[in-house]
Amino acid sequence: MGSLRRKRRNDFSASNKVPAGWYDAELDKDLIEASFAKQYGIRLSKEEISVSEYYRLLGGLMHDTPLGAIIEIRSENSEDMLKHFTPEQKRIRSEWRRYISKKQYESMTAEEKKSQMNQLQAVFKSMAGFK
Image (cartoon, rainbow, N blue to C red):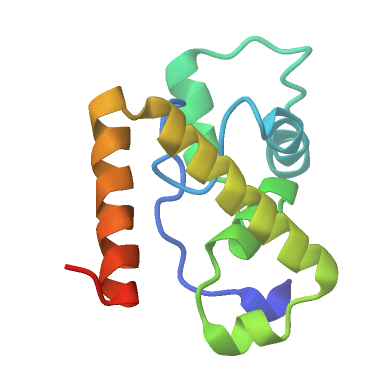
């Protein structure tokens, strides 16, 4: 993943509803545990740390951890880099995008869903030449 290395954004957030960054605390639990073990030598299943310490350490995870490598794939937007993705990298990125879309849809109200459907219908009508 060295070729995907770039300046890091703050990818980590304490929220677990719709991830503000590029990870989900529940979905990526195993990656987070492996990353803590690799970078800090901490076995989360065996050690007690405070919530604030957990998020501070989570925010400091580097790109060369299991979670960091996955975040690099999920967050890549360079068309040139995407052209050179392996099938596995493409799968990881696609699965994340589907997961986020589902989370966003589930968090929408019935009125927001109806509004989006109306907008989509309007687009199709205009494409078909209807007003």
